[in-house]
Amino acid sequence: MSVLVMVEPGEELSLQAISLARDLGSPLHALAIGRPGTELGAYGVETLHVVEDDRLSAYAPAAWAACLEQLLDRLSPTAVVAAGTNRGNEVLGHLAARRDLPFAANVIAVGSDDGVTRVRWGGSLLEEARIHAELKLLTVAPHMVEASTVNGGQAQVEGFEPDLAEEDLVVRVVEHAETPSAGISLAEAKVVVSGGRGVGSADGFGMLEELAGLLNAAVGCSRVVTMAGWRPHTDQVGQTGTKVAPDLYIACGISGATQHIAGCKGAKKILAINSDAEAPILSSADYAVIGDLAEIVPAITEELRKAQS
Amino acid sequence: MRILVCVKRVPLTGGKMVLTADEQALETRHLGFTISPHEECGVEEAVRLVENHGGEVTVLTLGPAEAEEQIRDSLANGGDRGVHLVTGDEEWDPQATAAVIVSTVQAEESAGGGFDLIVFGNESADGGNYQVGIRVAYALGRPVATGLKGLSVEDGRVRCEQEVPGGRDIYELPLPAVVSVLEGINLPRYPSVPAKLRARSKPVESSTPERPEPKLEKVRLVVPPGQGKQAEILGNGPDAAPRVVEIMREIGVAG
Image 1 (cartoon, rainbow over the protein chains, first blue to last red):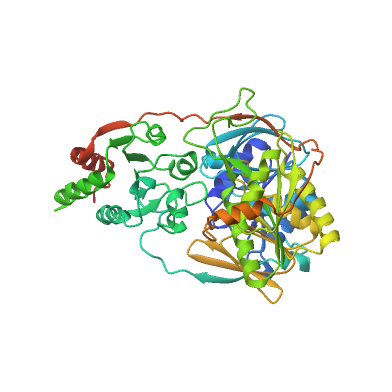
Image 2 (tube, rainbow over the protein chains, first blue to last red):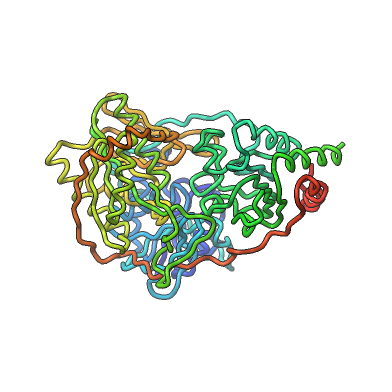
């Protein structure tokens, strides 16, 4: 029973999606709008259907879904899978709406029959669910499934020419505006120095910035801080902010609500600096220093300065 | 402009996820409730658009009787009227949610005129299904853009901005349209006491729709493993600084 995977060119998470898709059946077909760049045969893809169409040079979600939908008629797969990226979730949402089928977003495992396990609350909770449909639509939660290769040969590449309606091209990217990069990006920083309510004020972030400067780190914050207007939302780490994966995450005066942990649990190590030894952050952290962060953070900065000189 | 904003009542989770005995829901006896964050920004965005262009903001929720609290909060922040689709304790799956919103929109529009814009949050904090807005758009035959961090309306079109690595992607949709927004598109206002009082007397219509059988059926919830590790205490107060720097060296980030 064949399975169809949507592959986003240049998107590593698509390889994770393919790896989970193998658990759903075979042969594995992949669809890519534009050449994917990676040899997908090693990941178990038997046939890669490539759409090269000028009308799709700019991303158009409904048109991508139309391509998938037209392949359904040809391949009759039992499942359609995509990565749980912005586009993956959007395009499968479109496909689900077009076919009026259920769609399970951010799945981490599939069972026998109709069962799937998916994430809720940005990963703080799991749901075991059943998809009641002949054709299963699902996306794969980022970084929850390892991208793994199999003993596959080269994927057979076939061109695919979709029949696109005018209405499928109404919503498309008409312009791309570059934003000049400002310092070290939160998502890619090796160290993140992050502050919560305990920092006390917008000015309080000065000492976090000083420490961050020495560590080549990005400064982050909790949702309480952005809601108070102390820092911009672009600095927010959490379920509704940026998800970070540094080597070290330093949480200063952050209590550790699940909404925040959902954004920083990808860190290799977490150091909590908190006045409350009972704060929930301590059950997510590897290390903790208990006390007043207004004394502790400058002391670390000072110690680091000595060590670096 | 006539704008409809759809919001969801969700618990304010604390530091730990605790389930009810039947594993069907979070134990919320000791928790407060709020509007799901993306949707809170959706209300603010709708109110700002109406402040600039004139019109009316209708706030819709599908949720238990207590969800009237979230409608009233939205009305305190500038919404004009509420529509409450009252449910029991059981969750509605995304397909059923979309279907009941569609039939409500159709009834609202035939009675009071069309909505120029229907605003959703990109995904709810709890379910995270990423699809209700898209389904509603298809059923109504309207264009939809998701995950937006910027919205502006001009000449019968809505300009939509999406954050992507390195910049922003821009979409332009003809109205009427459906959009879903992300937290950070604005900083929602904090309601004044008079605004809260006024919200009490704004109209909220309620009805009790029938819940269809879910096609995406929740079997049970599970707390993921890994909750509840215990941090190694490096020390108390500034005296712990040398030990912290030692750890930074071990991790290889001390610079």
